[in-house]
Length: 492
Image (cartoon, rainbow, N blue to C red; front, side, top):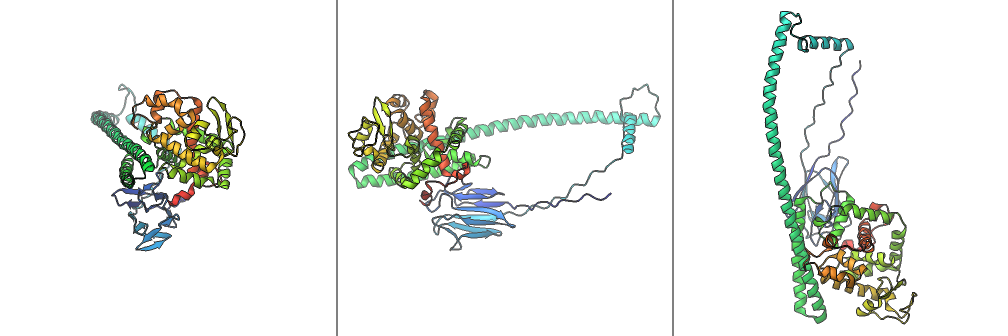
């Protein structure tokens, strides 16, 4: 019989070890990204680092680093490079004066010996073995007439069985004790993880408290023009960045963004945090809920049509800059998508508060409060050249100020609570919001869902905006044929 052919083993990918300036160490055997984004496997929060700065991958027998068209480039030994091979060890700088990463290839594991093929027995061999097994070790009665040699073998086998039962009884006992110890250790680790999560949440909401203070300070500085006030704002921003860096390290310890999460899950958590909600405190079914609304966007052409219209009209950059000017997430861009599909001339249905008009669907009272002229056709569902709610640039700046005011006061820096207020009406939601303690840890969208019933329309409204923002970060991941409409922010 010819020997079976041996299939050669696939090439072994050597493990790559990455060390960051703050002392963190990562090990990879698959491609990974380095950058500021929270879905990067190696997150580096530094002003020199782009959102996705480099990708590191294995191919043609070696690891290599590739610059992803970053703003500040990748440097090796002081020279800017677009790609670099990792032979044994490589140090790269993310920007000429940026943080340095050390990348090392671990030693390859020794090849394993191939297992020996089991011996094959013929049918006659098998029957013969069975007869010996029954004769010497079977369950025949003691009255059966057998030879002395057979009887001796049987008694010896019984003695061995008794010894094995005693031996394995001890082993089972030891294993049971080990199981109890493992259970105790698992409980300890679970408790330790819970404590770490609690500390991380405290840190997150301390950041949000600082955001509230900073937003109120910015509003007073804008009114007074105080140079000292502007300096205080700058100091607050620096402190905020330090706190966020500490929070990121906690998340690294907790492995919240580890490789077990899908790319979609990572984006959902990242966008949730961008809007000012603590991803660690999200309800258990939150990821599933957001994915269901992503699917709703995918099942219609509305998303693609709205994005195309916004890009053709040049809305994206102006809207993003208006919100960045208020130190708010530029992803509030998607609130206008949900309100009007970026239609600057649309009018809503008549309500007791009047007819909402324009891209941001301002009712007359709110529009006037934020400096927009209300035209003579306010009572009619038709465009009005004299109504500044239809002037998308002015209306966008007014919307950014309005959202900042809600964000910095009653919403306590909760972006999703801002959305609920914007849709439900600040006067209708205000009583429920103000019934919650005035601090970000107790007054946020998660707490609103936990303690109050909100209209289905408002629930849908918030989740449509969040899911739209998630898709927008990487539309092709969700089956769309265009890129991030806010991609120009990548270099910021």
